[in-house]
Image (cartoon, rainbow over all chains, first blue to last red; front, top):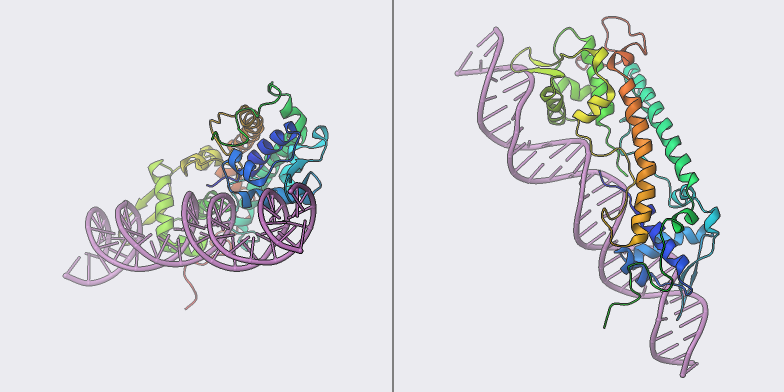
Length: 151
Length: 151
DNA sequence: GTTTCATGTAACTTTGTATATTACGTAATT
DNA sequence: AATTACGTAATATACAAAGTTACATGAAAC
């Protein structure tokens, strides 16, 4: 089953952005995240609409963080990205007429709801600030990425 | 994200099979589960290889349960179907060189592992027998399905 | 004010996965 | 032998995520 990795690379992007004193273009981010500039714009656009980042057009423009890392939880980010369900499994029919199928659905949904609540609670616990303290990055570099490829 | 609903409809099928005193053909099951006979054979084949059901060829043949419902957990069934991960989200890069991305991955994986363990534990708790006691089905009918369409 | 840089977005293409379908082989029953 | 039903490879379809192209809009610099 194909996994949605947007939360993963958006976090990666936000942390790098928080370390940068200038705004970062979609092209640069796309290079760092190994994806496409348009995908970056589409995805970061959701965060901008939620007030988490700012985008500036024109020369010197790009993306920059404008939220408090202490107050931004992974759960919030996940929701902003468009919660399409956390699980790779699910019931076949939402409102079955068959009593057996209804019983199966009840049991499965119950178990999944519980696990989902736990995961959301964990994501709620973790903030961008937590991720920032997870490592020591020497000031001034980009933790493995480069602004531009060597000429 | 597209969800795998095989566990859901396999459970549905197994319970109906457990109520039947004769074996049930792939075509009949496909009708009940609203899927394709070949898909049924492929999927039930995995259960047969695990010793949970039996298949018989030729006239009067088909599929029948040959496991103890008390001892067959949903977790076991899930594993037999080929555990391809329970979550619809995941990390973008498995072994990143970037320290930031590694930190992100650690946090996300940790939260997901915990939730996965909970869900697997819940699925381990539920047996086919539990599902059978979830409803009262009058003897002799098929809880909403028919053997064959009305002529 | 026009050139350049960068986002905004619609439209389209590619890719990956699950499911469905076709076709035919094999085994068992009558 | 004819029929029934599973076994399975090969192919097609459906759909969603991601990538790409193309062009419009806006901001800055000269």
